[in-house]
Length: 80
Image (tube, rainbow, N blue to C red; front, side, top):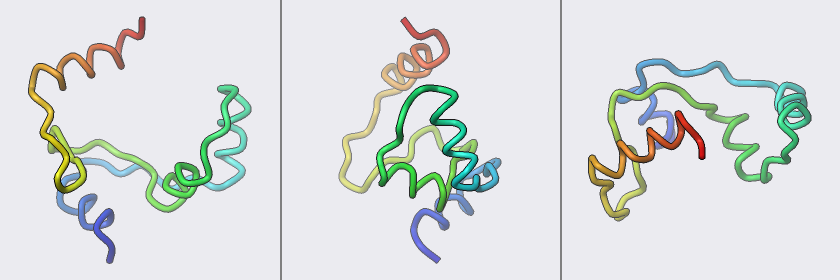
């Protein structure tokens, strides 16, 4: 088991099902973007989910302040 699978087991409240390559193709066409090969492989291997931890970051990354997390969440909900 790799580190990402362990993070899902420990912190995910819900993990989204893995999509197929054709599902990703359709999504790219629908939203008019092409995902990078690395991101595309990440989605095919792990997808996403809802996490109970407010922040999951690479080891050594500076922590996000709660103010910055709140600001990021606000921007995601109401893009400028």
